[in-house]
Length: 66
Length: 298
Length: 256
Image (spheres, rainbow over the protein chains, first blue to last red):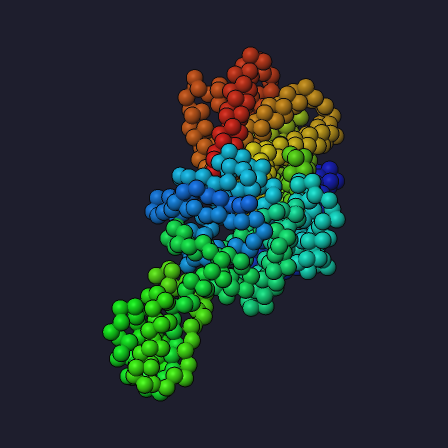
């Protein structure tokens, strides 16, 4: 277990970076009119952005808009 | 001077001859209505003129340049396709700024054209626009570089009556300033704004004339006569070779279609006189463009 | 003219958000690659320890900067490669498909300039992001492994630049031939699979652009003789120019 606690602070920048990307993407999602989104569904996109880690924002920015 | 001249211009696709030996002249400064049923080859003609497709045969001179040799003439053409598509992520202003930039047009012109099409205060992205708004923006982008020739492909066909009126008013307001070549299958539009029409069917040009001439040429061929006993006149007229068809209409009227107009004008009064009929009405009917169109196309 | 057209491409990828997809991929994998290389063995170790398997002796060699850069190259050749292709492949085909291209081209804009502006733009954006990503990866590798392997990693990344040039040329070619994104992707990966099949033949292999990715790894693990690298570099560049030339030629004669 002590190993894990050693690892965490070092892996921290990665988690922070991913969080920043996800927050940035969620803000874009919230501000964008629903009509501009594929499937016109903010909830679905919100879930995609949050659960797929770094891939969520990437998928959103490639395929999210009509 | 002619702005467009085509010489046996032809475009054959595998399955059909879209444009076949087209010889078309469009004079400078007029509004030319390019009329034809759907699939007649109107859009293909326009694509040929704009260098989007290459002719199978023949050639064309547009604005003094041979279109198979040069592309400079395109700079002096404004084009609106039948279904215009834009970069949806831009606002109208940003979209026009892009064209002003690549065509070295003064930025002031953007305001001018936005004013013309009434989109000056529109801040939304083009992706959210209605069909009518897109059509107006389409005209704005066609005007941005102040072209001398406007080519509009079916500018009114997908619009509601209000949108149609706006576009036609726009065309009317540009009349005289620019040569306008527009294709349509809506006759009422042609009648409202055009000086000349060309009628196309199955890739062939059937006629090219002014609207006035057309009406003159085709009008004198239908007579409406009212007498007290139309049946009697009907039987008499049937015998004459210059009568093409006859039909009774109303209570006292007869519609007479004639092959040429000189003889009937002298002979019909004589018949009425001989048969001792009362003449109530004798009239040459003005045909609508629709009648002419149907007659030419069939 | 090309510069002005490129400005529109820039506005496009910003306004459509595609730029962020690229930026996130390049930044994230620059940092994650060294991190994963560093921590994977430790995580395995801690898992083993926590499962009370003291009796087992498992030898895991300590990771080095080499693992970090191998991981980075792997990401560049897989996920970043795919993101780049998907973002850029529609640029010509979709404009043809949607009819936005004719609005520009019927105003007398030269077709080659139009297509080249897109290609040069894609090249510049990819190159800029790759440079940032490389520096970031280098820095993070230094933090985790106390090693700053400039020479090997730089040569390896330069080989990737040539490879990038190649697959962007192939993207242009596919986008010029295809009538929409899906068709273009089909053409792209069709040719890509063909190159993979060709790499079976050992005497052709050294001319294959895909061989560059093997060389990239070799530059990290050991080093590469210049003579050996020259063949694939030259043939890749020649192939790239061929695809650019054919793509433009096809587009110039295409009926829109």
